[in-house]
Length: 375
Image (tube, rainbow, N blue to C red; front, top):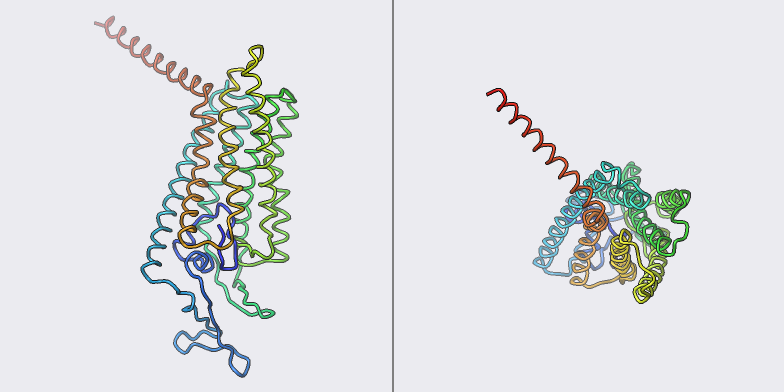
């Protein structure tokens, strides 16, 4: 989401800081548009407010350019959005936990294809966890100052804990899209039968899925620390474009996945028209799931990075709803597509339930026979 307030919030950013008004900048981005003023006296010092005893007091009344009723309406929307985010991530985490347990419990599900699914589940679980952890860290106290004729905000006290959490959060976002790319790359190699049987290939995919985001996050941390060490690194100034250190690789992965998507569709249609060729049944569900995932998340992300810096109030709120629903329910959709609707998974779970019921009935039958004999 972007705004005209001079800072850009990274895609996927949770909204509790806005709802609870703990983040002044985030609140100003969504609610206030106007000019704040400070008065410089003749002796070169800032005006000191007599009532609140603050030197360099800033007057924000110029930012309140809308009726009070509209402000309350905006806060109501933000509270609803925060409820959607909380519900979505809770549901996603719960479903992903069940999916991971199923993949680990049933040995027949332990294959390279499901190992990739398992790692993707763990990645989206990490994303859900870090979103809740991030809510524990509010934006630290800040002080405004003028540097080179520009008003800037500096933080007071230690900020490394919240910066660490935001860094892990950005890693989780980048990793989730990396694992979607890995799914697309594996499916592409599966369709064209290139390196799918190689154990090294599977290891490379797993290392890439977890390692590539590190190679992007480390430079971002260095750049932020060196050139824009403000607040919790939760916002980016539009003029610097440092957020593209993270956004850039995601956009590239989305574009490459679209190429895989088109290539896979072309191959599927050619095999459908050719009666001598067919796609193995065990691969069809993965194809359907991946082909849903790639365009759904890819199109959304491309739209998110092309959203304008300045939006009117209605567009801003609508986009917040869309962004919050998609981001928070991504893990739930991944669990449904790659686990709960997976034919192999349903077969193994059904067999386990039938076996357990049979053992229970057998045990009860033996107890009944013993009672009859004793009588």
